[in-house]
Image (spheres, rainbow, N blue to C red):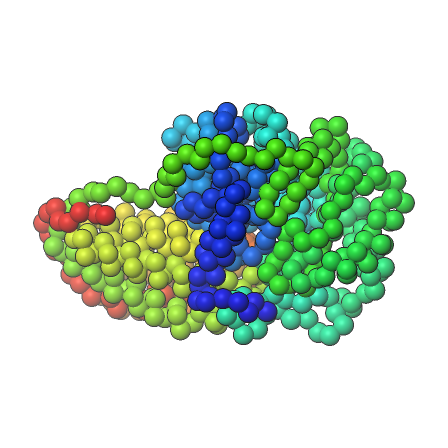
Length: 585
């Protein structure tokens, strides 16, 4: 149970600010995360770890000499936004390029990918290294779909050491991917974690049971079994990891026995008493093993075993010195020098005049009202959406949607007050949603709203056919980014029925308000029907069986939002003439 907090929605930001103050000799806070206190005297590759909060010491606790150059920090268990990733990269980049490294989760892939596109467009060398060490999350034949858990630590360490030694971008990336290919992790959970302010944990287990194959975002295990003794658990973990020994693996291994947040070190030492002899009996030499909390999941009770098979390239990097706020090995050179003037790289747009017709500004007001209606609805449903998401995911969907819609409502209102038309109001709302919410839903809703605004434009209020085209643009952008299809048990399962029904009814001549209302009913029915589906995308995919019988939270929230937005978006007729009004801050 997380007991120390103010406003739960501010927990991650306040924790990061406190961390940066405590360790101000090693790190400094920047928009989106933190970077090393001092920039390097000579250009070096910036290794940037990233992901949601709740995993300390990953990710910010690993910033320092011999390890990461910065960390992009999202909300609890939520991918940071593309803007956050861009901001941290700009603050850390010193002329030799940047590499984002993170666990293989859809929101992270999308957001870091979008940030990478922007950096590359500015001429900055940028690469991404995904960690896919969790052997429980997909079979060996689909290793690329596996999620990243405690193996993050080993991969980040090897990349950080390589960059510290002066390796170029391509070499750092090659070594990171090699380390990932040679890393395997399996974990087990004994009890779920609890979000700040939540009344109950994300999942519970019956007395005397454990979940084998946990995630690090509060997900339950893939298989519930009777709680074994330490010796039985050690044998189970070792057997499962060694069953996936890479081809041509050597006899020397890096080993991490990792606590997930509330498993005591003494318990880990007891388990080590079984794990280490079994690994040695299998013919392995254990190279500076680590036992402790390295990649946690808030206050989850659980443990994971990670093995990385070393060779003549990787072992010196694993052994190399490092000094960070949360981790020290050997005698790393303490960074010093003159701190450069801090800059803000938040990706914000400069001042620009809005061009909009009176009709578009009227429709922009309707858009603001629609977003406000969505805000009220999501606040009322936050807890329910979180419970739906916790069945097979990390339980953050309700909180993420609330954070996103709050930011969108504020940004849309501000843009409207400065004279923006509907297209610019929706774009501002989308950018704010993506930046504040982060995660998969954040980037999808942000991109979708921006596409909706791009289609609507600022020259007039849309007629029924134009509104249908804008809804199609919204759907197309989300499908393009998320790669989901109908039947994958995602928001797309409600979105496509809505878009199809609305377009068809408008084409048939049905009045747009009636068409929207009927399409929203179709979306709601489709969202409810996702209870009969198995997830094929996202964090729920590894726990597909557990989600059967529960509606998809993303589809549920989308149907809810479209239902309450309809009366506002379908109430105004089109009008005419463009004019320049206001200045964007």
